[in-house]
Amino acid sequence: MQAVDDDELGALIRREGSRHAPSAALADRIRADLRGQEAPAPVGARSFPARWLQALALFGAGAATAWGLALALLVAPGADPTGDALTDSHVRSLMGAHLADVASSDHHTVKPWFAGKLDFSPPVVDLASDGLPLTGGRLDYVDGHPVAALVYRSGPHVINLFVWPAADARARPPQSLVKRGYNLVHWTEAGMQAWAVSDLNAAELQAFAALARERMAQGAASATR
Image 1 (cartoon, helix red, strand yellow):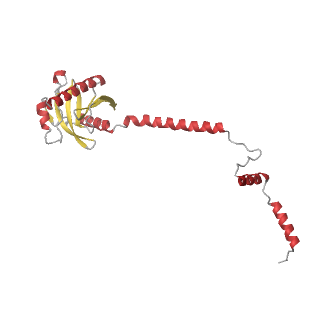
Image 2: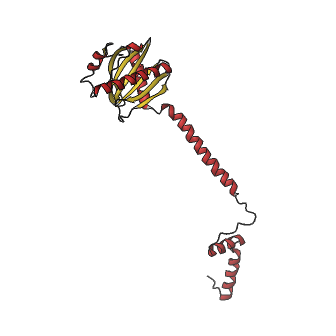
Image 3: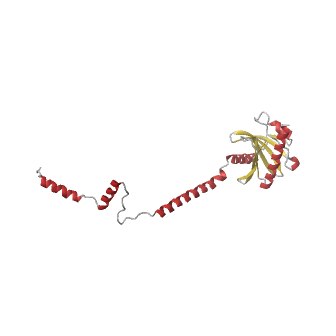
């Protein structure tokens, strides 16, 4: 290997250094970094306007809100598992011969039939004088617990009234909803949660619910005397 004297080595270093010297823009950025300041943008570079960033942020927030509302609207109709389960039970009771385990229009016969079969005594109200006769009752199983299903009629229409103890014993007024073409009304009274399900029109089912709730309250009041 040929030896290189000091003068030749210096010239080589200067020549190679100039060949790989940093650009002016890079040098400016290095100086700015060393001063702790933001480097100036290279000449000819286009910065993204702040107003565009703000518009994009607003658009993203609006899109997220709209998407959330859309999901809520899609989920809301099927977001009541109790209503769905009771509608299924109502439909099953109409499909076979199991509408009632005890067939009777006498509430004094239907109510004691549940004794020993449930750990609560369901309120069995008599609405025959209002054109809504009791026709029987049966045991059902909804949301992981047994319930009493009381069967009433309004002309040709069957009304299933499901009753079980309420987790929150506070009285709550009737609320209506629709599941797969069936009307439902539910309320809480006398420590019991009640759901009426029928193909009866909404107004007539609400009238049934109001009567049943009133009689449930009267029965609870007379029991405490």
